[in-house]
Length: 184
Image (cartoon, rainbow, N blue to C red; front, side):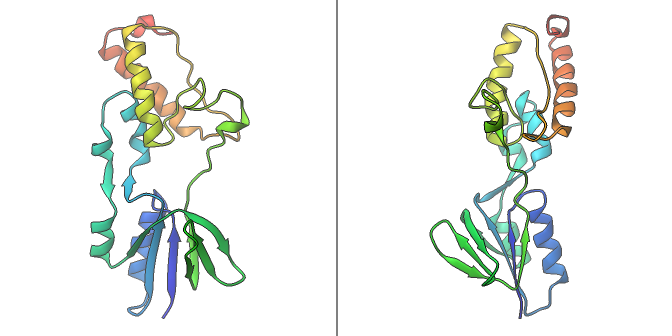
């Protein structure tokens, strides 16, 4: 019997848990470890940022679908991987033994690389649902008082794809509001 742990329950981890459960033997155990008890569909974050969707539209509790699939869900942050003993240490000190470990934690956002970057600085982000909700507040303020907008991504600190999608979505929303000409 093998114990397979998937660390992370996002765009990589959840599909991996499903596929691994299908590929594993009947006596194998599949566990997914996530610091959140929900899955959120990251590609929809730009829609949240312009208020086309709400958090509830793009999030799903992880418990029921994982239980239905026969995948154990552990909601805890991971602290450290101990490859020499095949153990994953959780934030509370608990150690989980594994035969196979899949790391699917997603990107590490490096807003600290540039002073003022990120949702706690002077820029908005759509990299996480929490960021997109803050960006939505700023979007409403912009719609009330149109001004120039710069959309971009920073090498080594974020990813580029969402910036392009966000720019197109912003353009579309501004056109619907009939204020596109006021937002260079």
